[in-house]
Length: 400
Image (tube, rainbow, N blue to C red; front, side):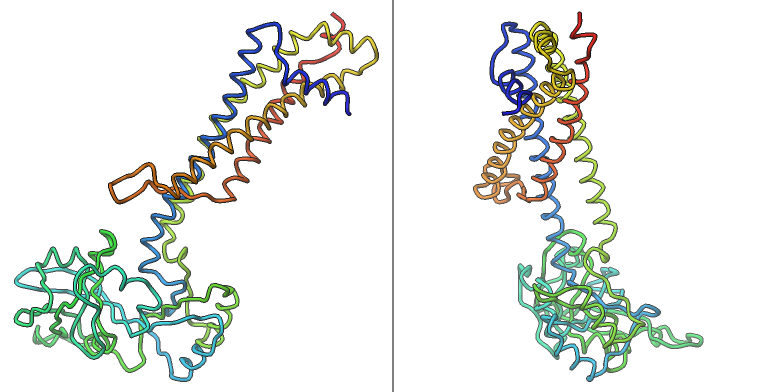
């Protein structure tokens, strides 16, 4: 067995005659355990909150959305649709017509997005699962599904055929407007369902059949604003992008969920970085205790070190004793702290001991990448701290 490792192990597991040194070493070990737990728990809690936040986004956003790079609408031919159906990486796709329009009901006004969708839309996204009243509309009808916030602001009811929801959109074209009624397309809609996802989405969309939206907005056959795609689990996004470009041409713009919610993802990444740096600062402060403990042990064992030096052990070998001891204490604290933290996270994840509301557990998520981050952070900082502390061993100390 390596001499430095053998002596370092003895120093790490045995108690010193000086009680103060034992207390300092114990505090350093407990500090490493606590900081390891804190770092892993913070990262796991944020992962849970991040997943919780993105679940709302995933309801409304598809895996990929195709838009026109140069304009608002584009055409998709029957031949292109056949090629899309034959693509092995696409599970389903939906043609979409979306426009911001003016709504009026019972002298109440609101501006929101009308979103015309085909029958495949409920296969591409999970919107239908978030209906809390009524039902999804049938094709070739004037029924619509509205958000809970829109329903509340306008006082909408379901299947009220005596009072329809009026929608207005500017007519496409050029020239002067002589009659206000000729400037707008108008359609009468009847809510058949109400969805509830979150405050933003609940006040944004009114869903209707795509044919109705196409006629209302004055668009031509096969003219759409975007195409929403659901990928198969095994699909490679880069390959799908190449296939879509070859089928639909180079004038399209393809966005994934991260690109559709660029600001949200950037905010979450910034918050994750802040939490990691803040937690790492706590770890650094804790490892100062480890460095102090090693320095105190060096002073306490000075007579023993002189004996080792006099019998021929080099200063570098003596220095490696305390460096190794620091690593042993770090690994011990890391192992215990990580085991406790993983246990806490898994218990919360599967048994929900902490609740936000009576029906909503506090979100946490165990991720292997968080465990790797914690291990690497603690080990690297522990090595640096041990190396700095072991540097106090020098010839001047050994010759006094």
